[in-house]
Image (cartoon, rainbow, N blue to C red; front, top):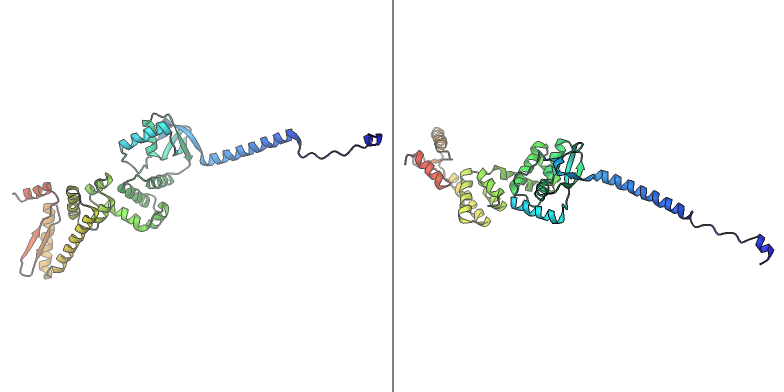
Length: 308
C-alpha cells in the first residue's frame, strides 16, 4: 500500500442509523408514547378491580325477580371461569361506587365468594344511569316478557321518551314495543303467570285481544287447567269475540227511557256481584241476566251473595 493511499484513505460510508443508544432511546420513547396512549384508552373505558364491599346496589334496578338456581349456576361458573363480562358502575366518592348494570353478575359474585370484581367505571347522572340500566337490562336474553314491559314503561315515563325514541334506543319496532306495553293491562294473575313462564308471550298476546278482564281470566284458567296451546287460545278468543259481536248485532233497540233503566240495573248488579253482569232484554221486556264467574271459588262467592 503506498504512502499516497495512506494519506488519502477511502471516505467512510455514512452510518445507517444513530447507533444502538439512539435506537434504544427511540424505542423507550415509543414505548412511553404507547403506554400513554394505552392509559388514555384505559381511562376512557376505565375498567378496574373493585371490592364488592365498595359497591352499593342500583336503586333504579329494573329487575326484581332473580331465579336462585340460575344464580347459583352462574356463581359456579364464576368460580371456574371468573367474570367474563365486567359490571358497570359509577363512582360516587373515593372508594365508593354505585352499580349501573350487572346486578345478576354482582349477586353471583357474592355467592361465589369473590372479594373483587372487574368493573367499567362511568360518569352518569341519575336519569342517564336509569336509562343505561334499563336498556342494558332489556338487551339480556333471559328476561321475561313482564320485566321487558316494565322496563319499557319506565323508559317512557321516567326518562320521558316517546315510543319512537324508545324503539330506536332498544332496536325494536314501535309495534313490538306496544305489544309488550299492552301486557301491563292484563289482570295481575295473568302477569304473574307470564313472569313465571307458566304461560307464553303468545298466550298473553291472544288473551289481550279480549277487553273484559273476567273473560281474560276465564281463558287464563282454561289454559292452566287444560294446557291449551297458543293456537287453541287464539281460536277460543275468536269464538268469544264473534259471540260478543253477534250479541251486539242481535240486541234489540229499546226506547231511551227503558235503555237507561236497564243500564242502571246492569251497573247496580255489576257493583253488587263484583263482576261485569250483562242484562239483555227486548221490546216485550223479555230477556236474561248473565253473571260470569272465573273459578269455583268465584262461583261460590256469587252463590253466597244470592243466599244459595
